[in-house]
Image (cartoon, rainbow over all chains, first blue to last red; front, side, top):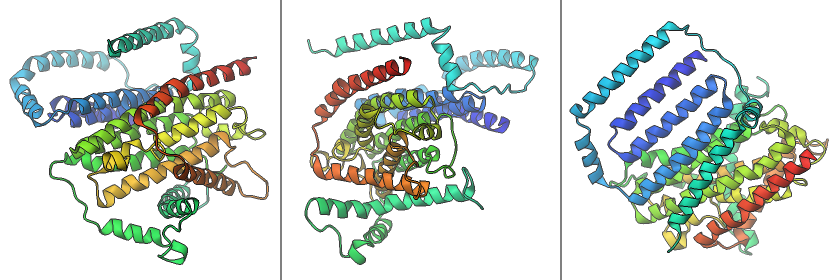
Length: 161
Length: 316
């Protein structure tokens, strides 16, 4: 299980890196899907099968499909690849890399202080649902109101004048 | 070696049988369509056309496997592999009999829904990477259709989940010992059937590949074995939907005592496969906007009401 965890974790990191440096937008999107799926595997290995499968259904299966749908509608061609290549210069990476390095350093100090045993605790669908509709019911309702507002505004924007 | 859940022999057998059945369906479907449309169908190769599938396979393997120079090679090659992979992975959680299956998973139904939603990438990437306007139109239609019908497919299954109290397909089959779920969940069954046809984009919902309107849709540019994988993938999807209907609504392996469980399962699934082929022979294709309106304005409210009523009955 520990091997699987580190394997899936490294795939997620490498795939996310590829999303940033990839110039072909469709390939970048495919790497993002791969990254989300490997995060799902990480969840599963840590004992959260429900979170894992929701990650696959909602993020990899629904939201990324809509991203791809928009890319198809825009029909971006070769010229966007050249534009991307023009933006991906090494000097553009200097500042973000410095900031990310500081964060990474902080993260490493925090991690090195704790023990490295993965606490494997299985949380099933029933436990998650009991929490969602028990102590966190207010958050669930708020999220649904937010989605409803998004739905209404999308309907309004799409309506013929 | 013995037949048990997850043993190597079982996995190999399931993989072999599922792919064999899907390949055989190419011939069986054409013969059945011929029967229902009062014509002969392919009957030249072998006894009664039984070797037609071999002839088709030889043809498809020896054809030129061409990648268009204007296509995005990486996505173009990936697309047919995705559909085969996700559908074969879905079969991992299907309980064929008490001792036959690949894994016994607590998130069986959710796993199948996840794989179904990943299957949408196959048709989208196939159309997008082909760089062909008919292919692009086909995959735009496919994306909208699959994303929409996934919603009702998920909601229609929740009634079954509520009645059996589990996402595990084996528990769902066990809960149907006395009464098959098709009786308390008849509306859920009908919605799942319609959504299943739309998800595997077969006639009458084969709008993404409607040949009279947009050539062959998303697989216009495909040839040889890459086309063959889309083709067999469609039949694999048909087998998957039929076996899911058997598991979720028709008692899975339950049946009369003199039949072995796996035979019961196979017979029920074959009935549904034949029914899907009959649908293809009987119903014309709707228009694209009719399909979407029908889904969002009729099936979605119906599946929500079904879920609401089921929940109320369980609580009372």
